View 1 (cartoon, rainbow, N blue to C red):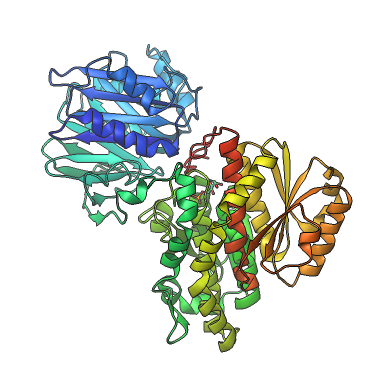
View 2: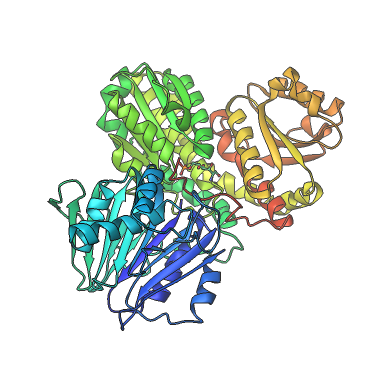
Length: 615
Ligand code: AGP
């Protein structure tokens, strides 16, 4: 989950690369580095542990001249986060530099062979192996840089998005891709390469996504040629346009991207449903479902594969498809699914949910599903992402770029999309009444307004956060559609405040976890009006009896829970199946404020990265 940026053109490369890396820091920030080919054909490499600005300060003490350069911000996989393991990595005499996002699975065997041939390694990284391998091949096969890169990568097993520059051929960047994300930007006689579009958008919207198993030579004159890594045959270039704007990836006056994205949810939900539900003709129309209407009508089983927050929205999808479309649903952790030998047939439909569209486990699970003949459907937020392009069909959540590592608007727009899918399939199968469909469509139409109302509780929730900021454990309880929200609320708190938290089905407390309850245990209970309300009330009583400190999320007008809970956060009433889109908002805000009060890095929590593109 590293970030890579490269530039070749007429402008000074250093500021372009540094600003680009800063936009990619959400992908990893253990260390950063840059390699620049200057006008005297020196290859200058500067790299430092820590954030990009540390490297920037260090580099500015030296020459940062040059119109060709590469840069990297790292999430450590092999070798600790320090200066020497920071990218770029160079060959022995320092005339080749490389940056890499991914993992080289067979780097040990390659490294052993290179050491036997006399190469001396400076770092513990897998990436440095490629630098020496390219050097070794060029020396022995007497080939140019592009061919040496191609031959080297044919010996490599693993995932990579790499960029290579050399003093000996100072008029080109060589790039290659296998499983890790990469996008090329086209300016006026200048070319950019990056892990995603965010470093490019201020320079160009014209981009091209090279495919897995391809490489490209980016020339100083702004031309680019694409080839197969296997047989070196030329491939066509396809252009696309970036689908977001610069302001969408700025903070817009908020202190953190996470808070901005929490507040973007009304608009994000509106964008995710806009144009997909017709209030006049009371119909839902998702292109991906329309394309395979017969498969969705006849399938007897849907499998949803995902990770993290996306796995939580998948659980809500299960409840929705089963209740309204009357289809059996299995929800699988992608990392588990990909290594089993799951029983799948061409009658099954496998849905992959992934905000980034680049999560390695989810992508691999989808590839397995394809191999077994299932119809694959992607729910992604990043247009043109690997999972989106791998799926037979799919729908984008249209949440806009999500920069904060903790998923917020991605989750609520995923749930909105799953609601639309379940309702459209139910409509196709005739398992939903017209009146209930109308009720859903009308409620979906006003849901953004209801989210805005909940956001008005932000100051109250901040007060609650102050009370519990020093807690060492939290429990989150919910039932039915709000059980996955309990899991999501716990994950939010864990990943940005570093407080241990667990989500549970409320009724499960009696089977052990209730032993944890005492006056030091904050218990967040999701208790909106629902078919489970009375049962939840008993669960809240059980917690109260044991002196648990209850923070309850209730439907406004609730008169019962408020007598049991220490703090009550009210949300507008809605259809039970839509309640997760509302109940999660207070949990996002609670986690955010606790993390800020604890001085945590909310947008870039320790050990985490936004897109887990490695196993
Ligand atoms: C959630 O807040 C985390 N950022 C993480 O669990 C994330 O949801 C998970 O890594 C899956 O990412 P994806 O949706 O991009 O596949």
